[in-house]
Amino acid sequence: MGKGIILGIDFSIDFTQMAVLDDEINPRSISIGTEDNFLIPSVVCYNSELNEWSAGDEAVNKSRLNNSTEYRKLPEILKQNYGEDLTKQIITTYMSYLLKVAVNYSNGKLIKNVLVTLNEVTPEMIELITTAFTNLGYNANDIKIISHSESFVYYVLNQGKDIWINQVYFLNFDRNDFSCRKLNVIKGKQVHVADVTVEDLNDRMTYDSVKNNMDMADEIVADYMEDQLKKNVVSGVFLSGEGFYAEGWAKTLQTICRNRRVFKGNNLIVKGAAYGAKEFFYMKTLKDYIISCKGRTRVRVTMSVKHKERDSMVTLSDIGDYWYQAKSKTECIMEEPTEAVFEIHNIMKHTTEEFRIDLTEFPKRPPKTTRISVDFKYLTENKFQITITDLGFGEFFKSSGMSVTKEIEIG
Image (cartoon, rainbow, N blue to C red; front, side, top):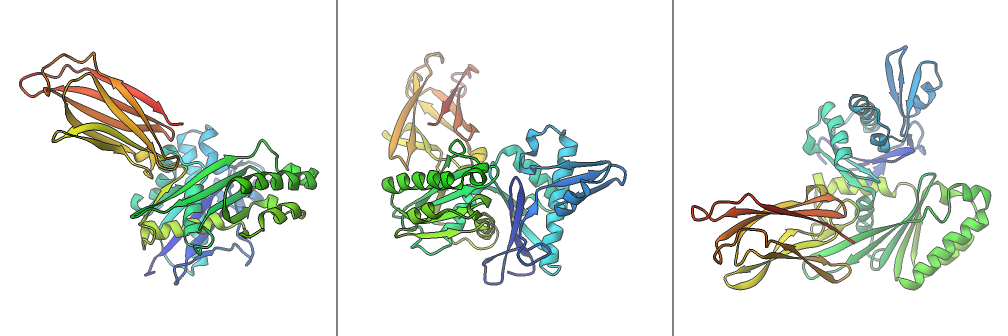
């Protein structure tokens, strides 16, 4: 591993976990204080009288003092409207604290690269976390931010193939979330697609359901999984979160343990972050896999063109790109500037959907004398935009300056 340490951080609502890669390139969870304490409260505190910032357990304790302000649910800090400067200070304080803990755990070794995983990845959150680390002396290229779903992929693909030979389910049940991630690995001749979908189950029950009526909670999860297992072939099931550490999941376990591997643990995501950090910063072992999940594009978008008198397709965006980075620009000459034809290819659903952009308002010109630019970008994870602009044709026809923009929602 050289002189530097590669660090994975699971930055979650209530608690944060960390893991480093050991000398055998395996993730090892970082304990805090005692050997079995891996949970760091996602809390920052500021005491105005002492002009002092603190984080983690120390922040929880100092928040009880007079003149203290506590900041919780840090991965959702952008929703709190604290203002830009205060928000940056809070996140920088917390990340600085995590680095100190990791350095102490690693006997003073330098933390060289960091991968942070969180449930909801947005361009704004990426910028905020990256800025925090650059303020702490890191280069932006040393930092990576990915979703929990992507961490799940990295963890599972680094396990034995018998676990993911069929679909893999990851049920998470804690104070803030009840959801099911489903991983399906589609083998191809050259590349394989690891696709993760997420089903929100919060409308079925809450964390309090376990305390109020354990039998009902067990019945709900067991029935849900029974229905899923009838529809899909599942080879592995992971259970994570405080909810599954309560006593009384007999019916659920009886349902999911038939002829498949079942695991329980709260460190799957953080270990997936460490495996992901290995892919980005140290050694690529999954280069033959395209990852399709939350935070990444799930479809291929192409434009119909003619090349050397043959019908062809130009790819504007491919499956597996980070949606906030999925941008492209191409130019072509139109036979007749009446419409442009595009296709959306959903590899997982085996569907192709066509849509057209009307260009009849563009100036009428002889065939093959209208050059256009096609600008493509994602606006959100499930919506992209295409802008087509008339560029004219050299000295023969000046650009009209006209453009057409269309937004497409992906179902």
